Length: 295
Image 1 (cartoon, rainbow, N blue to C red):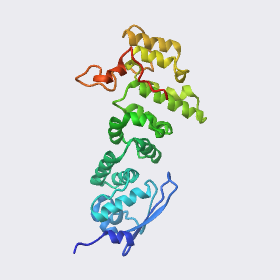
Image 2: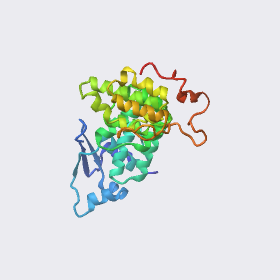
Image 3: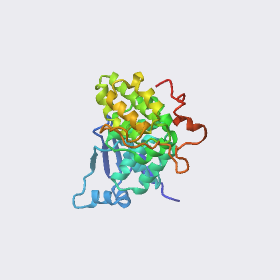
Image 4: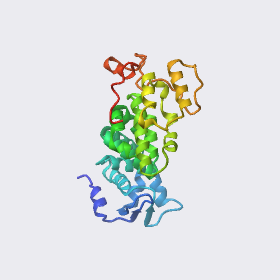
């Protein structure tokens, strides 16, 4: 009969170490009982922790991980496989796995995120990652934004996101019209400034170098800069220089802050516009009807 190690994690029977997980960045604390020898056999980090020259005692305090993440790692050790229940547990467990060098578990967490995160959760996860200090989720964000980019940009979560998250989304999102990205950034900045955080020009200034104004058509750009949402975004001289460059490349000197990228994010090797069929209307100078009235 195979030995059921999970029951010892649940019961704490015969445990000889306690982990007190009380992260500095989360208002939560939990204590887990575990078994030194089993942990040491599973990881060189734990082996050094308990049997090295500077071995830990019977109580270990952890301040840089979420309890759900550390428990996710313990479940993996005792069960012999990843037991992930939701995307946020996967995020926290991935951080724990990377800290204690469980590469297979970190990969399993990333796979789970790729398969389960949706447009509604994408920004919430990125917010949590930045808040916790885990860093960005480049691979996860790129996968989600490639498949659900437009949904992410239209989601309530996007407009309530942290600055770091919005900057990351604006930089990584693909397969959506550039005008939608620009308008989403403007709408977020307006909403952010209404909360009294800072003035609009300062806020949007961080986004301008990431926005591909040169990938817009002339009619898109004119409609954008004359809209109410774009008031205060740039000086008239800068707008005129950009428009001249859009109409005739090299005709005007661009402001230093302007992104020089002029390739639409829908570009493919088969189609110079990056679009096919009805999608070409996104980039047709004579047709701007796709612009959402919400913006």
